[in-house]
Image 1 (cartoon, rainbow, N blue to C red):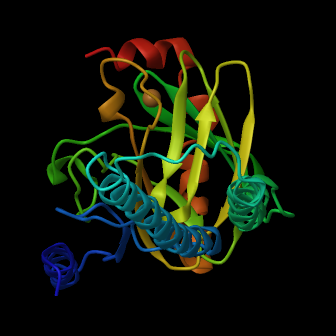
Image 2: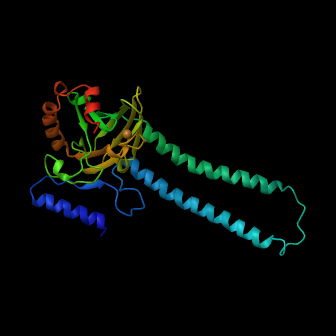
Length: 282
Ligand SMILES: [Cu+2]
């Protein structure tokens, strides 16, 4: 069993034992991890399959080119081939070394564009959330659920949570974004100051947050659990301190959370943007 998973299981057990709500951690980086995080959405599953397949293709091409180079070095060096040939053209060869790479590129392009457009085209969505990047935190709005608003700041220890839950350094936020499982969520992303990027690797989501522009993407999480992400556009001093913590929960848990959030995060109780900007200037 992987150390990271073991640690996660221990944490989950402790949380259950203490009576706290324990959610499985689906999307989190692990020490010495080499591959992507486990896929939590259909798009990410497809991305992983495409990536793995492409890696083997690239490996084979590199090996072939390396073989050619080695062959040329040994077969045609000045001692093995003292009298060089004078041929300058070979039409068949030239057509082949043009046509074959074109065919390979088309073979790569077809699944690549298919996934690219699937990720880019928002299907009919069940709900919308809006993420706004600030230096250096994310603000979230739920326009379909009473249009409440809250900010999510990085936390430095589990002590800062209202209720005990899984803590991940530089990934946990005081307030998580909560969405229901098996629900198509439209994510609108913008920024209030500089460029940021809203990214959740396990869901295959990464979209730039641009001041004055509303970008859009979507995801459909297939597994309940905690998903972490980070701002992925270098945005200043505390770029590394504006993570994304997303909780994918059952529809019932989401409805309960919404009912609570609507009063807790009602717009009247939230100061306007510029005040929030200075609040975080520590
Ligand atoms: Cu940022």
